[in-house]
Figure 1 (cartoon, rainbow, N blue to C red):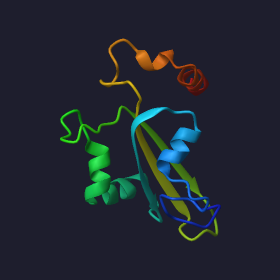
Figure 2: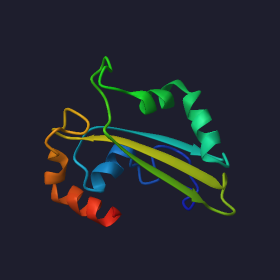
Figure 3: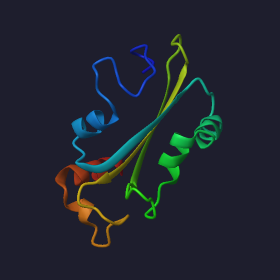
Length: 124
């Protein structure tokens, strides 16, 4: 966002969070995104998100969600871009793999996906 001078869930190419998550090779059943800019600490961002109904809902969704939407995995990003509009940019990506009905799935089903296996190996 900072490098491309925008602050929005939809990037200048017209791609939203679901598009970007899909492009990364993640086959999702549910996904969402929280973004923040300008705060100078993770604590300040979390306070802002928790004081926003929609952001708080993304963070706290559980199995008992009345819409049946819940997330099993979280990706977090932060970057500082000197000279940009906000300087500090934060993101949270929430998702649940397609076919996964419990978090974590009791049989470790998500590890059967080769892309997920590669991502897990790369993170170690």
